[in-house]
Length: 308
Ligand SMILES: NC(=O)C1=CN([C@@H]2O[C@H](COP(=O)(O)OP(=O)(O)OC[C@H]3O[C@@H](n4cnc5c(N)ncnc54)[C@H](OP(=O)(O)O)[C@@H]3O)[C@@H](O)[C@H]2O)C=CC1
Ligand SMILES: CC(C)(CO)C(=O)C(=O)O
Image (cartoon, rainbow, N blue to C red; front, side):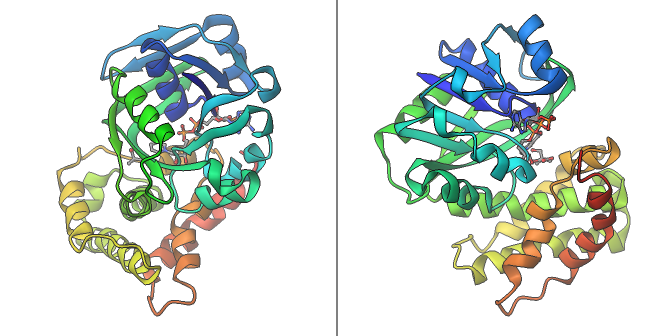
């Protein structure tokens, strides 16, 4: 199958390399020093699930690639709209654009640009970054990828994507019954984990050890779950409790990509995370003071690093 990875960074580079190793035709879209390194030295993945190195065609111009079966859409949420406007040359009649981003708005933003029939929802559970140009480092997380058609249908293309991802070493592939639930489920965790590790600039162990901060972490999760339900998302009742238990077991030194971006002075996904909770709460009767507080604390940093 023919794949284009739009945004071959921590998530996209990891998936692209694993799919190429499984025998698929993979094209990378990247930019800057990372693109230069991909072209000259190939893509190296240093991973707790096993290292690999692949030589793949890489470009910053989708027209060099042409129509593909799947676009794995893996740019940061603040780049979604701009990147979506460049998807045209990659689209055939049945091309699926699969967002593996954090946040609950990317699928809608993509649909506004390319039409809903092209969009597939997705969620990534991995901790991986561009360690240096051309090198993706996967330091932890299960490398679990969850995906599904927006209307929940078992189409041929989602079944074929499922087969392709299941065939990859180092990938735990899950076809979701209701991708909206999965998007909000991850959102509940990531808003708390990212928001609190970035706001405190400390790993989750320190947050857990400070009673006030740990209570705030739990309240962020609970607020997001309440907003999901107020927006008619059928989140299971035990979602908040599951995430709190999960966060209790996380390595004490676990941070988040939002913390990484903050401490590396890169553009932050605040508008797609805690600030999005505040937006989605608007017009419901759910109060979200903890997400408002996280947003307010991080806003000056997000503004400062907005241009990345
Ligand atoms: N990394 C992780 O562990 C996890 C990340 N996620 C989510 O996955 C998404 C992707 O994150 P991540 O992989 O970390 O991001 P990265 O920054 O590592 O990778 C994105 C890449 O896309 C490039 N890019 C952006 N726009 C364009 C464009 N128009 N043309 C060409 N290249 C472009 C970026 O370049 P540049 O650097 O120049 O902007 C960057 O190299 C985010 O929503 C994130 O929250 C979810 C789970 C875990
Ligand atoms: C859950 C976590 C922390 C790693 O999968 C993540 O999604 C992120 O940091 O963006």
